[in-house]
Image 1: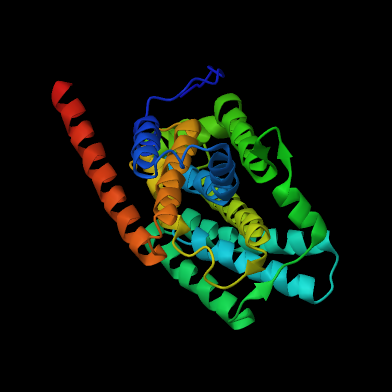
Image 2: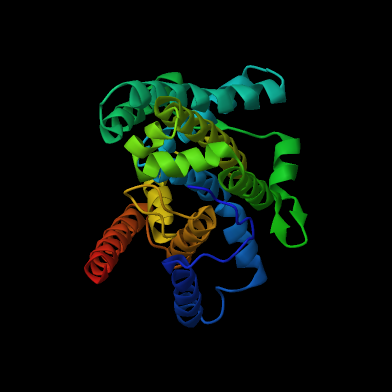
Length: 317
């Protein structure tokens, strides 16, 4: 499968309709308080963690895999950052260690997924619990993260776009380029589309699967750092549940759960749409546990709609 088109086209995805729908719905119910510049900036800043995790989810789903561990791996990353800062290590060392804690879990997921026949769901469900346990063992409470330069970066805006959102967008541009211009990107689509054909084409399927989890874990580690900096704190369950939001974002963005099809920009729009949904619920004072129920129901509806569309397409063929 050769991908030559490098133009930034707006993907045809339900995420666009969701963004429009949420914008109108919340604007009406909140009497014009939703689409204010202040709230738009908040959505961009606060959604950056989800946007980064959504890249991780997108890459694994694109290759017909799944990573349920990214939420707790991100939480663990934040705990590692907080503990090392408390211990007095240099800032860059602390950030690197936090990100590499995610890479370590990605390596574990990748080796098992790439070189065994154990389903990714089982593998990452197990490592999700390992990451959760590791974070709780390291620190069961809340760690304060108060570093002036990190706060400055979190609050920094270029125009009205916050720095965390710019970081996320730069990552999307990087992976867009990789997927469209590099052989590795072609390999990801090929492995997700049909493993046998990928093997015949000379693609190292085992390494490709392993590398995707390495990237996923590293992105989860980075997302954990971004999240902890925004909250000025870290705890073992801070990012728990964001893996569901990320998967929902990817599917809403038009990526097929069967692998081999999808747009990274569709995933980005899906992440923005899902965070807009959460942001509106926050403004209404809806509790997190109830928000998770809503996100779960949204995911079920999206999956049902996806299955319906695919069956409809199959009938037409």
